[in-house]
Image 1 (cartoon, rainbow, N blue to C red):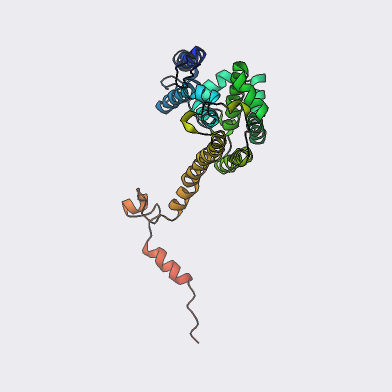
Image 2: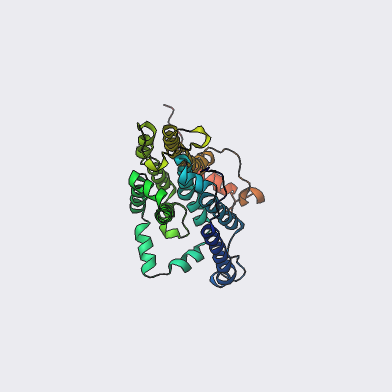
Length: 302
């Protein structure tokens, strides 16, 4: 039987999910938002709208044909790109698209708020995220996800959920959940270290790691070993470069800007009032000068 890897496969569950999220966001912004913000204030900014649109596009591309089908049935490195999009790109965009009022409406101030607050502490969130990263690359889970659609979607829910927890201290909508700039740089640096372990394992492994990807049909002529090595490279290089780019951006935005301000010898844009009007609040008089000279003791030249 001929098998065509490029044959279109519809995924209506993905379309319904994206449509539901878009509809829910529009409803919250148009109906709930005006009641949750001060009068005359826009519920969302233009940047938040762009971030939401980008998050939905990334979610759709990563979950639908052809990336979903190629990544789940033929090439593990495409599956790795799928996971990178769902863990490093889509979650921060979704959080940046969420205004503070919407975050408070969704979490409330009861048990759910306390639960999320507890699990978004940097140490806890980082440990949960990295544990899921290690677990999801174990052969037993990868092979099960390829063989079972239900397991596949459950693991993707786990990826997105743990990623949202990991990103919440960095760019979440709740100010009290976020950490400072210096802490964010250290936090993101540590997130780039742990994936080195499974990435190195995939890159230097001998033989087939995932039996589910040992298929007779080799898309683009990529062997099983090359596929595994490409997956390791995507995991380490793409993920690491993305996180390090954020760290470098934060460094220059925070510390380099302060350094430039400290060594800026240009005159301020606004002159002091004393220089504008030509005198201080208490004008200096001749009597003041004579009084100061009288108080000064002449030096002893002997």
